[in-house]
Length: 155
Image (cartoon, rainbow, N blue to C red):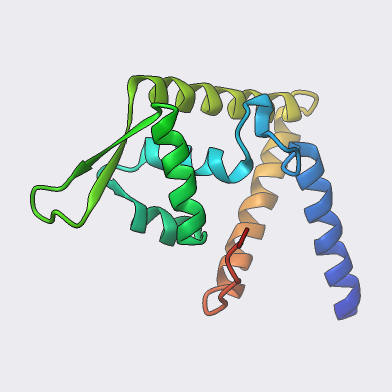
């Protein structure tokens, strides 16, 4: 049976390995000009109906002032618009503009292509084993983190 330190070393080793493969520490993710956090924010806005800054901050567990700067940047780049809700004037819904939709789809396609390339040299059975192993990891880490709060990123 593995010792606790061996397990920790294995998990950290896998995290570093996977982070490196996907280039998550690169300044700009997927050669897009966006940081990983910016890409995640854009992606979540694109897939969330009636999106608000509070929803994004909670979902992505990022500092609200950092998120506010990202939203302001996206608004300046004309990737998003904000509209005050009719039911509550204190809440603004965030929506992608046509340009934002284009960027969202471009990032999504690049991400899909990256994973497709990553798995391309594996046989179908091997790809299925990778997916199965990832689902097992997700299942047990979800259980392990049910009552765990990880400190959000602060710039």
